[in-house]
Length: 464
Image (cartoon, rainbow, N blue to C red; front, side, top):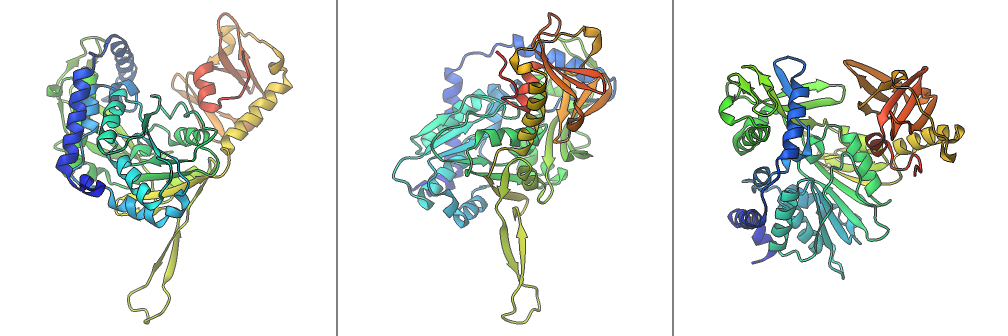
């Protein structure tokens, strides 16, 4: 059987996945629930504090996806092949991928699609040396299953990347080997903030390497139809079961479980279920009232060239796709109109090919601004500062844009424009040990050292 025939046999593919899941189940130990329960209790209490009929539990904690049951759900083979559009894209641009020594799939799922890509590139861009397929996910169970699936799909050189959340941490950059990067499916839209992911992708890639991104331009109602709807509904039931809410307490909204919302970051498809009777959570003691909307899924619906333009803000250059369209009624031989786009639409699927051309300008901006301030105040020479707790605004919930850091204190959001920050300093007092303080308009704003510096930059200060 050729490699193509193996991928055309969907029943055979599902059998390979089922055997990998079975092998993993037989060899795994029961998951320790104590840490998970503590986190779930904290999340439920925080989400239900506002006493509204909406409890948002989406994108809260990666460990809620990291169980065997969730892994089994995610690795199920789709009933509809998704290879052909991707093959056309890679074939048309194969000259860009010559010299590729490694392939990495972010959010690899069952590794079927990335295994297909591996064999396709072997055909399109032959190499004297065996390429390595790198699988990346934050779910250990999925990675273990994906590794087994890839090997059963005739890939001998498979490596698993260390489990981490790329929204928070970049992968270690390599000094050698040219790597081709893939973000397939709707993975890029399933993060709270795609900008954090793109920033860390830039840090993980070498200059000149390519990234292939796929995303879905789907109406929220499309997520309720057919096999896709069945999978999404099952995901929501399983997700809330991880929170300790049995599915007998949950129902759809007259058959609907998706809606869309628009905020300053764009359009989001929202997955939710409704509590059909009062529920008292057995561990946290939180009481949820009938009619409560439980949100368990948020997916960013990127519009047209919104996503490639976002990548270009962080050190990438989008490949331009050209397509000539001849209007009906045009004279024979008359040249058509050429459309140029930074993405290639294939029905609801959209593709971009992006090349890293330089370090993220946002990272440089932050480093120059904060590093310059640090030098000015002698922080790099060992200047230690301490503040009384009453003088500091604690900002443990925040976000940032290329223009400002947005700090949430209680119910208020305060914007700290990067150009107007007047002082930046680490603190080492007994009260605020290992925190990070920004001074803006004579007010001090304190952040946890680890989370703040990890998200903003990995080399702001050489603190020892």
